Length: 334
Image (cartoon, rainbow, N blue to C red; front, side, top):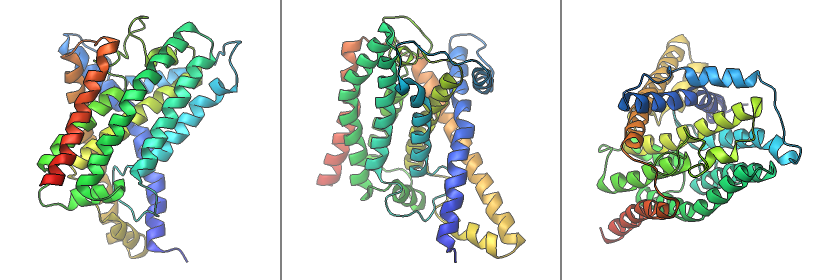
């Protein structure tokens, strides 16, 4: 006999990764569109990222003669890891998940695995650009990873749990969705989005200049279907980090009680089923709008800044560390 909670979690495992995978390229194009508009240009179409992925999927994959199996397996492994991470970040409804699914520490490790194998594949190609990008990425990761741990620790300290599902349930059920401490830690989360997705002022995803490349240098030797998977992985990573910030700061539309409606709809008649489906569509639409607004903010933020010098980037990271540490201190002495 399948319990209602099991049905809810099975639906979540199908819907959440699928929805994230479907919408992620849209926000890459939207950010490019906003940046182009800020610079007085027309910019790409909103669906351009989907066209680019389709084009790459039909192109031949070319490998460096010095590469090993690491370069071949990395695109598939990274996408699989990020899809697994998408189970930790509900974007439509919060299921009754088994213990451990949603643990924020495991989520950080999954992001670290993706970063590690991307850097490893950059080295594996034997290209000097790939080695340079991997070296820079790992040097900066040594600074941003402790900052990310402190930021998520502050989030866990404020909400009294290390489970992202429980965090989102608390914020969505709160009568006052925004508190001063959550605003402070949200600033840290926004900086983490900028850093982890390689955006200005940390990196410039639109350039191939030697002096500025970090992420682009690591994937420079990838081609065809492998490059499409890496680009898709990058967009999924951005969407997941955006979802964490959105569901903490503006949880409107995310339902913490969909499991009952869904299972009831599946077992108790067409009216309940229609109600459950309409609720899912409403939550999906709400997330699309909120994530779209955040993508616009990211695009405007990028347009207002220039690329920082490499050795000045730790100071930018320390802003996230400062706001996270301040959040913890405010909670301790409140």
